[in-house]
Length: 582
Image 1 (cartoon, rainbow, N blue to C red):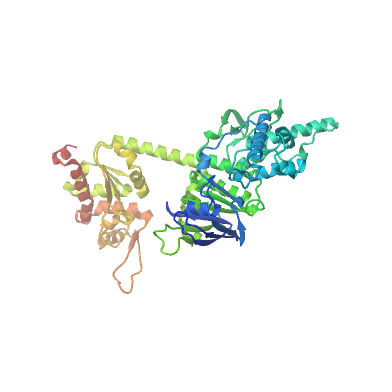
Image 2: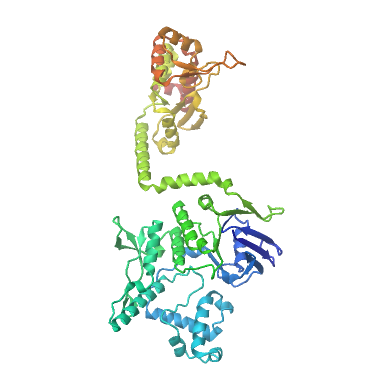
């Protein structure tokens, strides 16, 4: 596990001179509220105020007790991905452009990468300087006696003047240089009378990227062959959408500008992987909210690329993030730290966090990701929801008076019998539409979808749950969610049967000789207190006996249901005469 130590030697924004801290881990994730100082820490580690900035920050940064400089650190933020330049059509004029840039750097700054104008071009400047000194000597180089023609002749055809930032889009040049190598190798083989052997060259860069895209599940590819034609690459490199059979659709080119911001970030990281960066060259990769536009699938891909091309190469990765998804889906090897505002922290600005602290977040994100990752299943699920919603909307359109939806047919049977025995209740029931639904889940789906349904309702709709469902009473007119009030004195604790006295249930069992309930063993402290559960397969038989033999007094507790119906309907009509006409 790596140790990244910070010693700040100047005041920098919210961090005072003398601030120090040591992070531990191979993959470090920094989180915190806006303004906590995450990006400031990234600046301090980078030892420069901002990406591409010119003002240095005085700090001692050590990795495993070894000093590292700005040149040892890579940095990227999501902002650089938004305007990612498109792929170039490289050719001989591109080569000339690179050599012209190098010539200007020599003529103005003697290719000295310590000059602030060349800070970001150390690799290109050093390579050009080495070639020129080997060919013309130190004295001629230092005295600027090398002519422009000599300068350009000395640099090879594959010379690229590019920023040290591995995220720089140089794919066009990379494709061109490889195609040029193939062109030269074929020419040499022909001159020698030999057959060109493709295996003598590295894997083509477009194949490396296509293989990476395939592994990551991307649905676009480069073409599989580029070559030199009239000293130009045959066509501008371009991404193409995949067809269902896996071949590219040449009628569907995709410019980088057409990609989503999240895809641009991943493409940028994929291009960077071709640089073959190793820990001998760079020690730390800093990503400042690089994941800002990622969905869960891109976050998974993000971690795969970071692990395969950076962490596994010995490069420490530090991410500053606001994303709960990034935190939740981070690999088990990640180390977490939370950053606190200067005004909030009396002593510690940075505190380590155990991954277990984010366990609930991980479960929620992985559950959601699994759901959307199964595209076929997800489509079927959404189509089912759409069909069910349409059915509920159509049903709502057909409701011509206030309605009461209950959990099942037995509830309807009891309510109809109660109304039959009580004329006042029958009058209430006659004014509403009573419907049985498929359990509490079906009622809950109506409640969840109410925002889509309510505009089609002309009258109140009451969703009535059994007493044991622990539902709260809620109003969202014309929807009303109610739970049957619990009758503690009765031994049946679940279902609408809780409204019946124990004596009625016992009478039913005695009269029929049939066991309708399972009774708990009495507690020694409360020998008379029992809990009865109506056997599911016996509910219909019990209901039939009660509806045949019970009296008006046996249904007295059903008043709680009829009272709530009357109250809700009256509240919404505000006019008893209007109610009577319905």
